Image 1 (cartoon, rainbow, N blue to C red):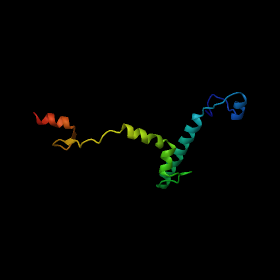
Image 2: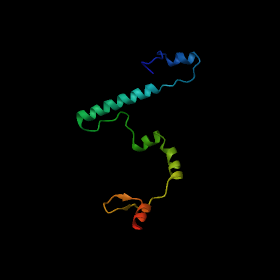
Image 3: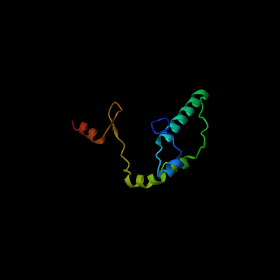
Image 4: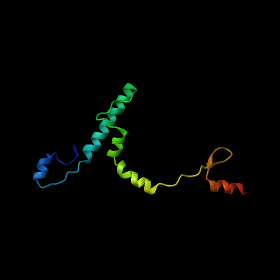
Length: 105
C-alpha cells in the first residue's frame, strides 16, 4: 500500500526480481474513497448529482460487477412468492400462523 511499510517499487523491477503477481488492494480502495469524497462534496456544493467520470449504463455497471453470473444463481435459488401477511387490529403485520393461533383463543 502506498504510504505503508512496503517500499515503493516499480512493477517492472518486481517482475525482474521474479515476482509474477502484485496485490494492490490499497491502490483501489484509496482511489475509491477519494472518488466518493469528491462526488459527495460536489453533491453538497451544487445540490445536484455530479457528472460521473467514465459513466457507464446501468446494464454495463451490473455486468461489470458480475450480474451475468448472478442471474442463473438467482433463478436457481429463488423462493416462491409469499402470500400476503395478515394484519392485526392495529394494522401491524403478523404471520399467518400467528393470526390463526390468535383466532383460536
